[in-house]
Structure formats: structure tokens, C-alpha cells
Image (cartoon, rainbow, N blue to C red; front, side, top):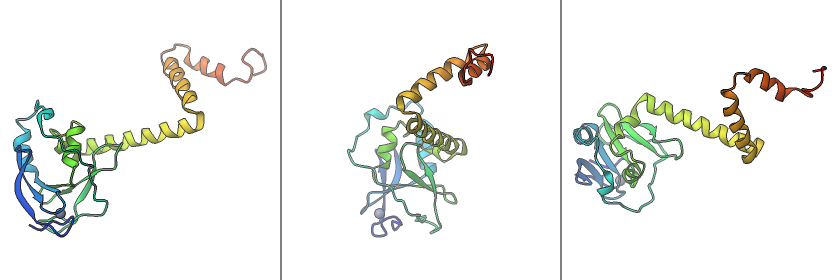
Length: 184
Ligand SMILES: [Zn+2]
């Protein structure tokens, strides 16, 4: 099989960390994994401790452009791994094959996701990534607007108010120009 990522190498059959079979490009080092091969290992690996696996200190690469499936030649779908990095995994839904760029398997291990690779391709996971991403955006906006310290104070006050019986009256008190005057 020819590598559709670097378009130069060949995908050679082998294993990932001697755990499950996968193909590795002899040029760019990317991995082509069939979900069925991964799942046959993962089903018995619920409590698998990845800390015993070899660690490769390489910066994970990420193909930003659209990638073609090495089997069918059709466009693969991209799935974000988590909200705080831009790495996306490519899935070819018709053959259930996954493309990992060089270093992305290591990234999954570092993130504790080596045994839940398949979950990344589910709707709930992707929704969580979007929600986390939106939350991080708002955090940043409020930090800019109120300063980090001001934001932290407001957040603490907001959490405290949430449990108060007189919450509405307290918010009115805060919003009033002069809560000690009869002329609101
Ligand atoms: Zn390649």
C-alpha cells in the first residue's frame, strides 16, 4: 500500500508497540491502523498500564490538509483528540481505518488515551471537545475583560452565590447604584 500522507513511502505491515498489527510508512513514519485490529487488543486492555511501553521523544506531527484513504482513495474524516491541542486523527469510515501521523500514538499514550482510541470517533467525544473548546474561549475572553484576578474573584463569588437562599436579592444588591438609598 502506498502512503497517502507523504505520497512517497510504502505502508509496511508490522506492530505498534508489539500490541496490535498496523502498517507503518517507511518514509514519514505515520501509522495506518484497522479499527478491528486495535479493538481486538483493546477489548482485553481495559486496565492496561501504558507506562511500561517504550517512550519516543518526538514532536507529534499533524497533517493539516485533507487526507485520502490509502485503501479506497476517498477523503478521510478528521476528528479532534482534545480541545487543548490541534491534533486530529483521520478516519476512513468505509474500511474503518485510522491514520496516525508520526508521534500521534505517543501523544495518545501521554494523554492516557491509548486504550480509548475508538472513543475519539464518537459523537459524545466530539461534542465534549467542542464544549471544552468553547469553555476555554470564554475563560480567555473573561480573563482579558476582567483581568485574571478579577475573573477569579467573580467566579468565586458566583459559585458562592449559587448556594445562597437570597441569591436574587444579593444580585440586586450588587447591581443597585446605591443599595442603601430608597431611590433605586
Ligand atoms: Zn508516508
